[in-house]
Image 1 (cartoon, rainbow, N blue to C red):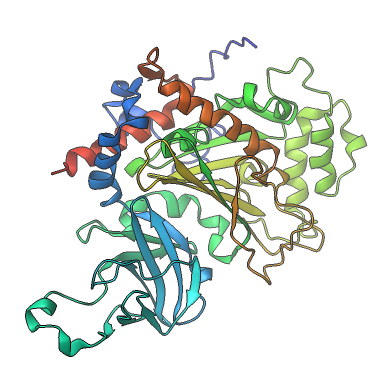
Image 2 (cartoon, rainbow, N blue to C red):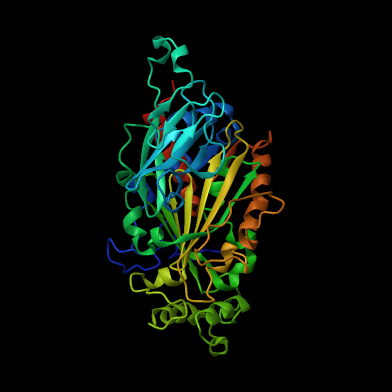
Length: 464
């Protein structure tokens, strides 16, 4: 299990394409300390952040109420009056297409006595009606009707009775909201992300899988399992024959965002024989229309061959790959948007994950997985590790049902299910009287960044 990193490979500094010009997709970003000079304060982190009720309230008041958060997909708001519900901790929001050209978001709270107005995940209404006393609002949040209005004294209705709105904007087919009316625009918040992820055109992808699982773990414990590669060698040993878990690029971006590139199509340096064509590599070769027999004993040539095969105008996926770099054609570029969203990106499909806090319990959270897919040639599928079952229709003709699965039967595929097995054990251990601090290595820089950025919110927006 022990392995000595080559002297030329410094986690956080290694560049997958050292010659990539500045501003290009593959270019290495400046070091962690350039954006976060305070980075070494986060080599250890107090575990109260993962189970303390006071810390949970601090996150709510100082971060969740002031940051942009992904609420859902634009495709779920196809028609005027279409809406979906988005729950974020103790708050609930209605996101609605109020006109052909406008999407708005409101607190899911009746202005009479606080009842939640919608309870389903999705719907379509010309008006929203409270189920308690029948107050109604138009799709744009304007008050439409107060039941028995004449029985209210004017003083009781002097406050605004329209639904209370929050900032709402879109990017790449995702809807984001921000409860802070003074927060910077979404485009400013996203910083480098739109430019770096532009080639994927996620606005043209459609949902082919939608799964939510409640876990007995703080949302950060779950998120942190997906923003570092340190765990790959132990948690996902089956991947070592076709995934390089040593040579990978970590980039710390502005505003808490980041990315991690993992090379796929090369056996890990931890493998004794890096020329053996493992069946997993053989599958990747065959998937792009090549003969695996041609690569027996030549495993280190597979990655380049896959990229070349996708470059062909008659490639088996039926896609135009001209906007992508070679690394994007083969590797997993894992992007994260602060505070709680990750993307495992490929031209054919993207695995999107959101990590949502529980309304009242800091030791529970909702783990939400979308798989997005592009329109592919007949018979082709998104990357297998994303866990899209063979029988699932990926045409985009029908939006899949949102599944609320049990953690005992997550239906997420082998890789994600291996991650889930660790998560609740971590949360239990963090509660032990024997454990005070998490300790992070340089392979876990994105976790350190997460806590550093959260503290910046705490300092900017101190809780009352």
